[in-house]
Image (tube, rainbow, N blue to C red; front, side):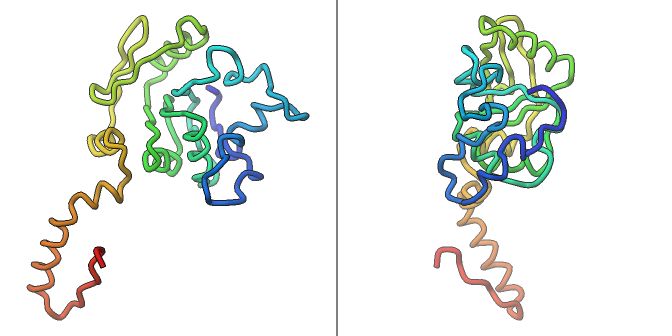
Length: 195
């Protein structure tokens, strides 16, 4: 899956976009590549091969997740068991959707990605450990550092999305609003999120 520009239609074909309940989307992930015309698994597709069937981190090509903004693609990847994607670049909205749904995206330079791809080519050496605390990918041969914003790292580590992360500051937000609106009585204060 290291080819460039794998778009969201490849990740989650349109026929799987009929609902918003997020159930059963794992069946649609890479459907046209994972399955042959008769519906049987394609033995030549990497995620159907022994050693890769339960992969939790995928190596992907540049501009992964480009195309239409379909969050279903991310929901399906998560349901398939994908916890992270490692590539050089990701489409912006897709990257944001991954983070909001608890999937880590790691951007590496091409030489580091090529070394990981070489190790991943063999089921004997395709095991990695990803440390979100240390921002490191460890293989049998080396440790590769990656950069991630502290906020994104903290939210992923806590398993929280932006709303849950913001709600932990609700007392401070409410205190700010009380002070803000008391200094500006001509502004109408919105209803409290607590009801």
